[in-house]
Image (cartoon, rainbow, N blue to C red):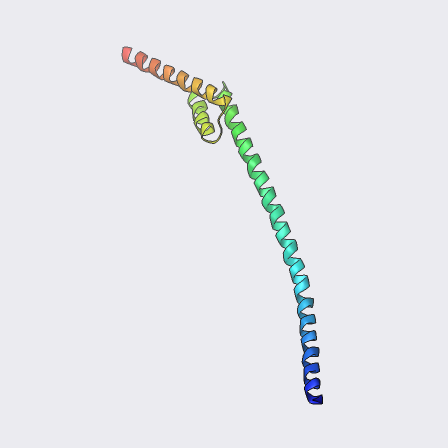
Length: 116
C-alpha cells in the first residue's frame, strides 16, 4: 500500500509540475495572441476609415470636374458617368445638363459639317 501511495504521490507531483509549466507557457502566449488580435482589429478599423475617406475624396474630385467650366465638356461628362456609378444626388442633375449640352454641341457640329 505504501508503494501505491508513493507512486500516486509521484504522479501527482509530476502532473503538478507539468500543469505549472504548461500554464507558464500558455498564459503569456495567450496574452500575446490577444494583444495582436486587438491590434489587428484596430488596424482593420483604421483601414476601413481610410477607404471611406478615399472614396469621399474621389467623389469630391469627380464633382469638381463635373462643375468645372475650365474642363472640356467631354471630360466633365466622363467625370459625371464615373460619379453616378458610385454616388448619386444633386450632381446627377448637373451631369444630365452636361450630357444634354454635349449632345446639342455634337449635333450642331454635325449640321455645320454637313452644310459645308
